[in-house]
Amino acid sequence: MVAGERGQVSENGQVSDSGGGRAGRPSGYAHDAGGRALRVDARTNRIKVLDAAEEVFGQGGESASTEEVARRAGVGIATVFRHFPTKAELLEAVLARRFERLRERADGLAGAADPGQAFFDFFTHMVADAAGKIAIAEALAEAGGDAEGAATQASARLQDAVRVLLRRAQEAGAVRGDVGLGEIYSLLIGSSRAAAFGQFGPDVNARALAVIFDGLAGPRREPPA
Image (cartoon, rainbow, N blue to C red; front, side, top):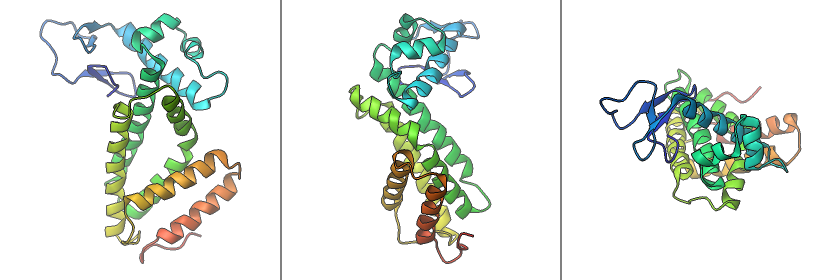
C-alpha cells in the first residue's frame, strides 16, 4: 500500500478500498487519507508519477529530479506535488512499491515444488534488481526519508518472505542449515553492490553467484553445472 493513500493500488493501477468502502460513493473512486474521493484520472496520474519516478531515480544522474519525473509522466509539476508534497514522500512511495513487488514475487515462490531452486532463483533476481533499488534508496536517504516509513515497513515484509523461502530450502536439504537470514542478507547486499557498481560484467557476476550458491548448498543440492 502506498504511504498516505487510503486505497491499495495494484500493479495494474486498480485501487481497492482497504477501509471497507463507504455507502453512497460512486464506483470508480478511491479515497485519500482524509476520506475524500479520488477521481479515476487522479489515480491514473498518481500511477504515472510513480512509474516515472521509479525510472528517473532508478537511473540517477543529473535527470534525477521531480521536474524530470513530471516530464516523463506527462503531467505538470503541480500534479506531482499534489500527490507527493515532498521529494522524500515520492521516493518513499516508489521504494515501498518496489519492495512490495519483490515480496509478491517471493510469496509466489513459497509454494514451489522445488524449494531450493525457488530460493536460489529469488536470490539471483534480488541481485539483478539491485542497481535501481540502491539508487532509489540512496536518493531517499539524501532527501531525509522516514526511518520508520512505508519503505522500511515494506522491506521488513520482504525479509519475512525471504525467511520463508530460506526455511523451505533448508527443510528440503537444498541450503545448509547453519545459516540464518542475517547471513543471507549479508551475502545479498555484498553481491548486489558488486553487481551494481563493480563493472565486472555479467559473466563474472554469474560465476560469483555460483560460488556463493555452492557455499550455501546443502547435502541435497547438486553443484552448479
